[in-house]
Amino acid sequence: MAGKANESYRAARGLVETSEPDFERPLWRKPGFNGVVSLDEMDKALSEFLASTRRKKGLNREQLAELLGISGQVYGRYERSESKLNVTRLVHLCEIFGLAPIEMIYAAAPHLFGKSSNEAANRMALMRLVSRMRPEAIASLLSLVSELSGEGEIPDSP
Image (tube, rainbow, N blue to C red; front, side, top):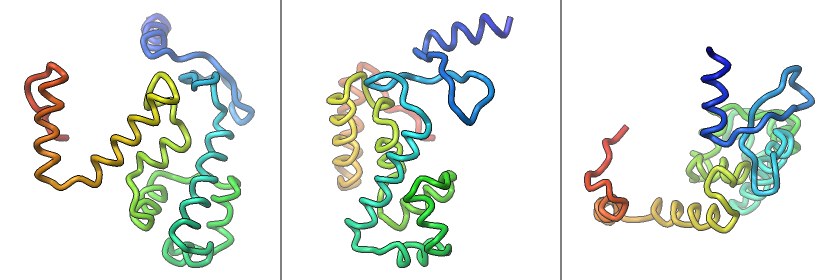
């Protein structure tokens, strides 16, 4: 029975069977805009995002490593895609960079944000704008979007 339930779950979410060099068994992934992006490619995109963001913030690797409480060598492994970030390190980097974690996720997996690259880019641009709004404006926007979506009620907070 688990097989049928899993089959239905995969179909409903558009997941396709794929393989990865580091995995013995097949895994199921959501295709990107040009097919399934490997986990390695996502790691590389995240590494490029980290390096680019660090440079934009005017920090060298040693300075950022000090803020993270790690050595420059350890941090360099993240930027070279030799080490994988865990979620707490990702959150810590977001604190230091002044970013929302969603921006890092978008850099690695934009296909999670829309059915086309244009739709995904528009959603991310909207999220960035909303993140910089005044609290009063956010409340008004939430009310408006809730009405436009046909929900009528403002969703519960987590």
